[in-house]
Length: 107
Image (cartoon, rainbow, N blue to C red; front, side, top):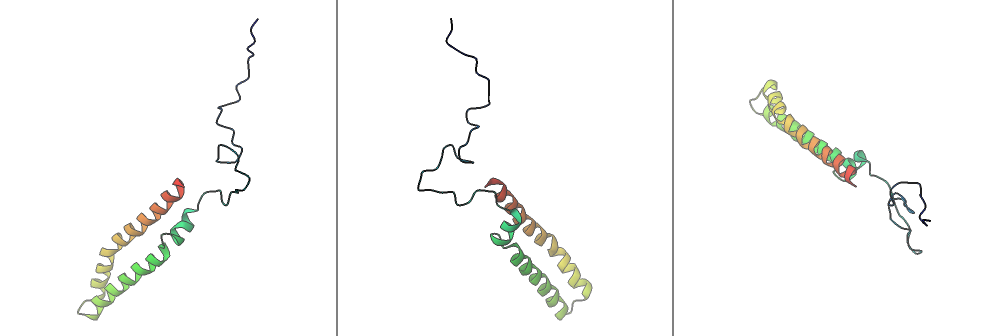
């Protein structure tokens, strides 16, 4: 007669977490301060300073147009200069927004 019993498979042995995200309970004198995921929009505002950089790039575009208009340039020349710089501004701000999103996903 065998002493082994069939035990139902309840899943992987590491699926049990006494403390969410941790393999065992915390020691008595420790506590969890924060457990969650960062918001990428808030991270882009507070850590990557996206609104301030948007204002900075907007000021650069306005100054560029103003310098052209203060010289011998026309409104068309000023608009052309701004339109030529606009893809670089969009690329820079989009890259920072993407970096904020990726940072929020990995933490």
